[in-house]
Length: 368
Image (tube, rainbow, N blue to C red; front, side, top):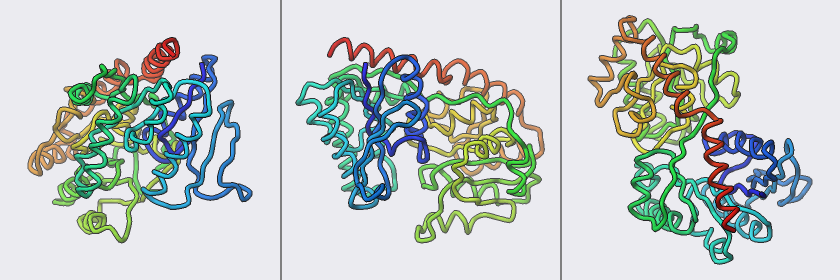
């Protein structure tokens, strides 16, 4: 079959979970004998062109440069992708529902659409009321415009089923298993293996970054905390996070070099995950694949993903108690690491995820 992938910034991955998924899934589908097209958002014209096509590792790419930047530019890009895909053959896989209303023409033309419903975006604190209304409207529209809503977590599947006429399919994210990583890749950050904890997330209130940094900085530690993420000097919350960090908290910014990020995960004493909203978070899945002991916010999303062997906090006191235990080595770290490996192997291997997606898409193609 021919597969069109929409809704992401493009491949190779340099932005987020959906891009990382597409960068793995598109080659998998290529190797299975399918033809694949991926839409890519470019930041600048190529040889004066604002639209062009090329090949990347046997995958066809269509690039668009939006005239505006930010969220408006992304919406402009999404609309351009829909206009273009109407001229193409095949099945459409839309990763994310943030502009699902734009996919209406695909439905009107009778195209077969699978849509990943992502997390519950309209519940995020960072959005204004109009933005929340926009995301809510698109969530409902996406769940009913597509032929198959794909949800990355059982709780998201339940949530989607309550507002969709179609039965959702639950397929989580996947990640690579990391069995080794060069320690020299982390030496430049001033850290040593097993001498630090790491947080890898967007610097947002619903990810509990400030709470994590404050708890870690509340007393001297034998270990350090590395907080990966992009900081904006004009963002008040970002500045509060940095101001709360003591001498043992490092802010290296956003690191996109995959081997370095994998080394940071692999050599960490524990991975800190403060996400409070959403389904299966790619960063948490990647931590399991690296065999990390996980210290996560206690909610139904994180508990299903990480499993019972990990550490969970609900407030500053419980987080502090966990950090003390991890810092002095009395925590059940090896048990947590073994639990992470086991949970990853049973639910989050790429072969499991890719085969599940392929089955859904083949079924759609047969119904086209």
